[in-house]
Image (tube, rainbow, N blue to C red; front, side):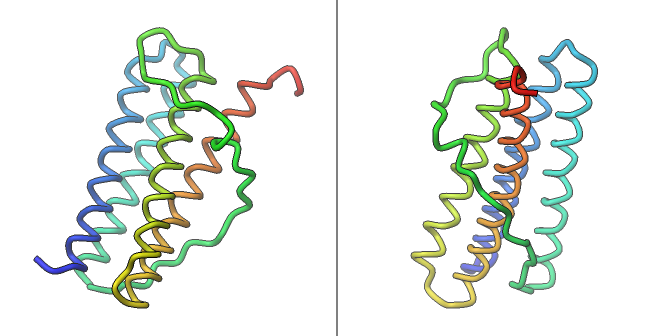
Length: 149
């Protein structure tokens, strides 16, 4: 294996973990609307896996993800663990922390990249995860601070 293949396979594996995580949450929730939402998140992670597999097959290192406004909400919330009885705020806090960890990991890898090409690839992957994180933060604030709405 080479460095490029290892990087992309690593990213694919992280997307598989995220898909599994969202499906696990979907299986635990008793609310049909929430189940559908998490199944949708899992499907999005599956699409990212397929996109990354396309990158792996084509060896093309250019990924296009637009930067999003990051209000760093996840950085203000303590991580919790998945358990049987959880509030929706708890579930979204876990999800946004997982996405934050993935984003930071890719940012770190970009900083340590052996070439400009791989640096840009890691930065793109970090942007992808940042987009996931921001989406989870929005859902978190909607359920954790619903009295504001």
